[in-house]
Image 1 (cartoon, rainbow, N blue to C red):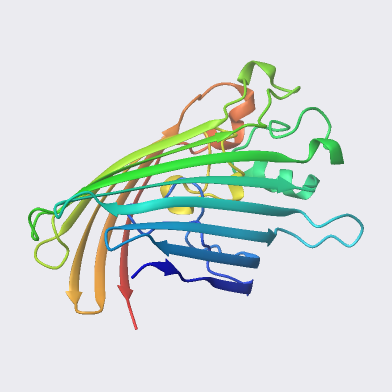
Image 2: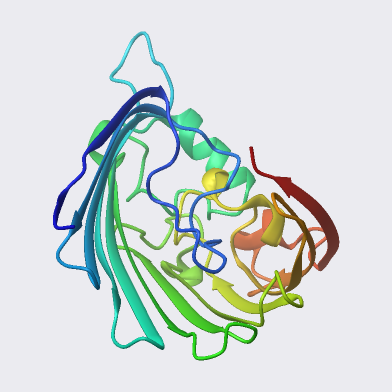
Length: 274
């Protein structure tokens, strides 16, 4: 049925910007429930195509003396069925970070952002804003119920990352990207997935990124391999292997992300739906 169904939430809200299609690892950690307001506006064009618009305004930290650090996000996209066998989708997201302070940047640098790489020079109010754009897309082939195939990709660019005055040789390091794929059915056999990710140091505020993939550190490249089996009608068992290492390994600018650099993690999750 055609039409718009709007949903708005306030307080500690579900993150409206994450997909459940493939592994949406590039930006937001799955455990983050931001504080603020969010609006979701899906629109059914017809029986085959759906548009969506997601918005959110989140307070990142309360500050009694200065404006609260905050973020405004806007995301739009489309899902659709090309044929009975092929489905596709894409999204574009814009994130505007404003009124950021030294505490915000200190936390980011602890997890891999280059010191003073997210600001141009000193951390003044005029240098405390930045803008990030992300695009994602996927294609699915569902000719076989037992062997569906999904391919997906993500790309992120920080348009306000600058070469740090402290480490100018490090450059901007302002992009991140990832590609992945899944095949088979978790109900009939085991859904198997593989993903590769390349996350430069300043592509995203490091304290908000996915913690499992690279231990929450930017300046990393890595793989994830996973399998999911539905063990009960409302319960899934997932086993995931994460492997990551730093991109530049020697420059002083990357010291915080290079220490204990190579990480291998085997993780088991049981997800139960009520």
